[in-house]
Image 1: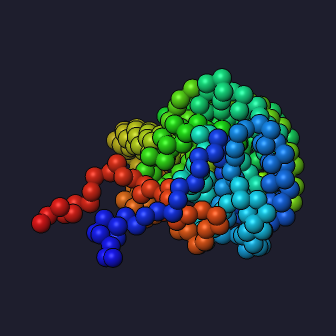
Image 2: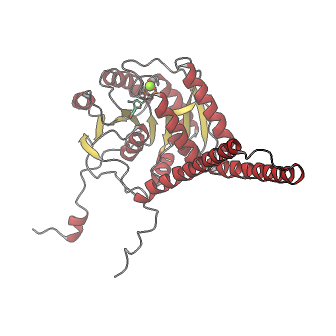
Image 3: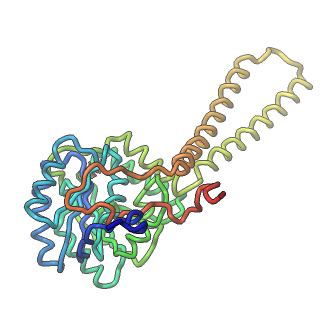
Length: 348
Ligand code: UDP
Ligand code: MG
């Protein structure tokens, strides 16, 4: 029997998974040691708390055999499934992939290192059943983190509150429960630079916080060194605020005013008192100063242009290398479907 065109274009997809009540999305980067205990603790907490659950682990280019561990865990319990990226795409992208593949009525996002205690999930569920669609975990303290990181985080939240377009609840991270409605809204957002903390807040919906205590990392060490955090913060600010661009303009304007006043001052002084010394030092200093300002402004504009470039390329957000327990093509979508088709696509 020959296949119909429709069948070739849309091959019959693998039987759709049943929709569990709760999906747990876990980004994984070199967490082989943590995974067995994570699944064990999750199973203990979730089984009495919900009708059905699944864990979707996203192996974000691990090199420590995390994927092999995930395969073993899947063999032992089919509620655990995984996808593995072709390389390291970063935690934000891993979360996006997890949301693409999670089938639950609600989705909890949590770290693999047990810093987000599974025991907090029932509290999330309680709020969800009360009708909150976006329940975020708020850390009660950041004692476990270094002083530098803590101060940096504080400064970031302050900056964001002042200049960002959306309000970020302080201390709220990725550990949270999202209702299906919120997940679908997030998946519909086309952007590549995914600052999810900002996106969670941007989509809105009835939200509330649940405090939890950040536990110590079980095994391994943090993957976010200071430099990575800094670029992450800049990503966040620049995707939710155009103030950095304005800073360049304002600084430029102020400097230009000062320069004009100085010029007038020098002109008058020369007119009334004559000139004494040709001012080489001041000349050099001012040239350097202005070049600096111009470079800063150019750099800022460049950052935004770079981001526009990244969005315009429309590359897929991630590439999947392997799937464990997840049928291909079942739930994937093309991000950015809402965008108009590329120019020229209908010229026939
Ligand atoms: N992670 C990831 N990709 C990365 C870096 C981290 O998926 O490139 C995962 C990591 O496995 C963990 C979570 O993101 O589950 C948080 O990472 P980590 O604990 O290192 O960050 P911290 O808790 O120090 O902020
Ligand atoms: Mg951690």
